[in-house]
Each structure stands twice: as structure tokens, then as C-alpha cells.
Image (cartoon, rainbow, N blue to C red; front, side, top):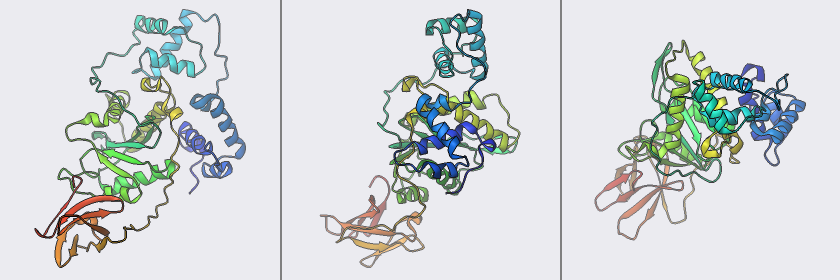
Length: 384
């Protein structure tokens, strides 16, 4: 694992959070992570202590002026609200109040904050949103990650295809990266960076579009690569974006708070805007579904580390093992069948069923197809 850039060359809050999330795990080698993040042990232990004492807000630079005043006037509160609104103009009263409290300010009741913001025109306009469909979330981080591209748009350097990745349990943003295209190689490169930083999830879900899905239901090379890492892959139902509702809401916030009405001269300016917003989203922005906690307070990296080295599949005794050739075909008892280009060079297991001449096709621990030798047919796909 290579050392990251010094903290003054990257997003400081993001790096501090990454360090404490890893170094605070049971049995973590703190000095190793200090070297990895390019900081001294003294600095590392300081940020660990602040994390334990104050959570995400403890990682912020401490002010040089006192924040508490028991006799703070309405004008003082209004000035604070204006400052917060200037920084987070799309946030409502509840988020602003909690954010200021996390910064160490003593705030009045929510009703007072709301009334002051309404009086001074600091409340965002109401947005229609999507009617509630009943929320579900997994009970621990890394049980499920949601992945998608935010709709592409033009900027000074061409077109951007932002790749986004969200942890279902904590709403922690794992990736918000400008990409020049939506090719498999591009996505895989970005996922390797995410896996190296946060480990591997149990499952990932995405829509049915390219490069991770196929409207015909056949397997893609990216899906096979994820499954090879021990990740179960699922897809949202066609024409049902609410299946990835948390990510859809993330995209709406990203559009409203970063992209709407903005023009970015080049990819560097665009990615800096993404990095800054992602840090605020993870570390500062209270989330109502989390009881106004911030996502970073609910997230921790996966215990399943990414190595890049995968072991070949092993199949149960009694299963026939066949290798798919370079053209995507395999031979079973003299019958040539097309398994698909995604499986070229792979070894698959064939499990005989109770029906004569029929086999299930397995790849690692996933059933990927069925064979009927009587019909000389093979069906490969997610519905098998």
C-alpha cells in the first residue's frame, strides 16, 4: 500500500477521516496507517483522540475565538445563520441548526432557528421530491453499496460522467469522481481505488445499463470481475429508479448544491468541487434518516480487504468442469455451446439436474446458466 500525498496537498478533512476510520479499528497497526497517510505518529494519535471525543466534528480545525456566549443576541444568531446559509444555501433549518451545534455553537430551539431563517429569507425553496415508498436500509456498513453514473453533462474540458458510490447503511459517499467515459475499464480502475481505501462490500447493486448491466440479462465482464472479488451483484428493476432511492436522492442533492447553474473550466476545477462537496456531505451535513447524524459517524471500512489477487474457482466433487474457449464457447459431451464473451478463458462448473440431459452452469458460487443437451441449447443470464 503506497503512501498517500501529504495532507496539505489533498482534501484535509477527507484524509483525516480516512485515517481515523482505518486506525480506530480493533487491532489496527496505527503506525502503519500513519506511514500510509504520510503523517507522524503524534499527529495520528491526536486525530484519533479528537475522533473518540468528538466524532467527525472533532476532526475540524479548531477556531481561535470563543464560540459560546450565554447572552448571545438574536442579531448574533442571525449572523451565524447567514454565515451557515452562505456556505450551505440548500440546507433547511434543521440541518443548519445541527451543523452549527456540531461546530460548537449553542443554538436556540429549532422553532426559533426556523423563524429567524424564514424572516430573513434564508430557507431554501420547497422541492417536490419523490413520494415516500417506505425506506429500507441494511443493518451494518458494507452490507450493500449502490453504484451509478450521475447523468453526464458538458464542461470546459468536454463531457463529465460522474461515478458515484454510496454505502446503504450509513449513506457514506465512497466515490464521487469525474470520468471521461462510462467504459468498463474506467469503472474498474475507480473501483480498485475505492476497494483499496475502504475494503470490499458484501453486495453491490446498480442499474441495468452499460457497463455493469445488460438489457438482455446476460452477464458482463464487469459483473464477473466483481463476483471474482467475492461480491454479490444485483440490479435495480427496469424503470424503477426508487430501487436505488438513496443514490437518486444523493444525485438530486449533488445537482442542486454543486452543478446547477455552474460552469467548470476544466476537470481539475470540477473534481475539486466534487471533493469539497463530498467532504461536507460525509462529515458536516446532518442526515434526517440518521437522526441528524453525519454519514461518517455511521461508517467504518470493511474488514474484507482487497488484494487484487483472486483464486481460481473451486467446484464440488462430481461437477463437470469445462473451460470456455477464446470465442466464448464450451463443449459438453460433444455439443458446442456459446457461454458468451464475458466468460472467455474461464472455468465453469456443470451440475447435473434431475432432468435427463440438463445441467446448471456455475461460476464460483453463482449459478449463471442452464444447459439442455436434448435441445442442444444453453441459456446464460441472471434469470436462470
